Length: 540
Image (cartoon, rainbow, N blue to C red; front, side):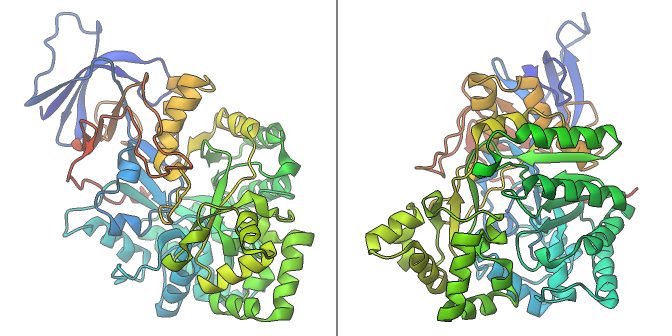
């Protein structure tokens, strides 16, 4: 064989008890799992290389169910932000906004809209237009060698609406709806695993339930799932969850709830209500899963805090409204007094909003401070600071939003349909540490230190369960015949290195990561291997 991993403590992704075994790999697949004592008298497997895994746990590679590496995978062949965590597969195309399918107009608009997530993309050759062409570009990777980790893609409903409807806040016409249905069907046939929405982001949020239901029917017909960032994580959170459950039940479409949190003061201690809602739906036959990150603050763009009416028409229209004194005052009133839908119906508290990144280096002094701290330094109101920053950085700033609750985080991660997702934005001078630390944070803090999950349960949440949601027939378990996407980690030392002060520090206690049986992390260091490819929807 190519490789034998000897004397590993196998945590196989099923949630069952771990066991000691030798694991053999050949041709990128697991060929042998020989449990200690299970085959007395059998010769131990031999290979061209033997790796002694004494003291290490061997698990399937971690699957990041909510990633924003849409351009990072094409920009950074190293991509240690994810590879060093043990992530072997990322699901991208999240929150209803990404780069395929597009035409020339839409590409320019989406690049501007999510500059804060992925940068302006001036270093990227946007030669694709369809979902299939984008996936082909990922497969080609760097000089045909591939990308750092595997990637699966969700069709972004907001981008689809840009193509068919534009930026108008109105129902789609019958012809526009039919075009959106065709675009979603084409993307599914070309390999997407489902569809995402960002229902607090424009223009996706302008879609009514009937429109979303029709698109979900198409997704279901092609064996995919719907992944909504739903309409509120604040004042209307439970109603928003109920809406998504009902909508997908009507469409007959599996549902995966993105970053399923209960945030803001209005939701403190209310996770049990969400979990009861999900349990009732599951008992009634619904097909539901969810992902979370193991941190309390959220992360998004500053412009996302504005009311939806202020964003109608796209980025240039937003900038024009911010320049107009009277309109800007209306925006301020909605944000600070009424509670804008962009901020989940909750009046904004500027001391909870921390600037995490800007596009213009000349504005770097804002990064790392809350809006209120910036405003106090400048001797002005927080809204004056925000308005100027949005205008000067052309909607580019990203933020950390400190509105979460630890008891909610712990309760939700225990649920039987929970999976892990970083929701990690890799750009900015001070990104959220979840981008670099989500998976070791689960294993170190929530397994070893706090005991919220057992090691076997946690690994199943991060491997076997997401693989089942993605309908991957040969990933997510340590099992003979499965792909050798594997992680070796030390349960006694694994930990997130990233912190809010030093968010790009790499984790500790993860010395080996393999994709298709090739080492992408070896002895704790990134190799030059580019073993990642797209993982496309398995046809029914």
